[in-house]
Image (tube, rainbow, N blue to C red):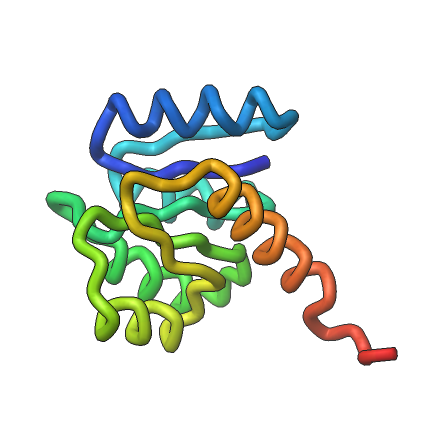
Length: 126
């Protein structure tokens, strides 16, 4: 299951459609508080996270996830891409950082990488 958190309804709908087309189950959220509550109760395989939202922004979501010990892989998607921001969210635990508009193949690769990295966490390397 992939969770999409973005305050733009059209983008949530487009991401949902794209991911469902590629065989993923998808749940969407408009507000960070709702996503945090849902992730606490029902873990997902990956979270696609918009950084710049009104109310609870993506940075707040990453901090709340860390505070709760949530290990959900996060792919950050932003329309305000800056190198310093990318480094900051990666240091906060994000698995990938993509700029909008998101390239379909780059998004799918980032999701696959993020989910693959999670599956190897805590396992010894061969």
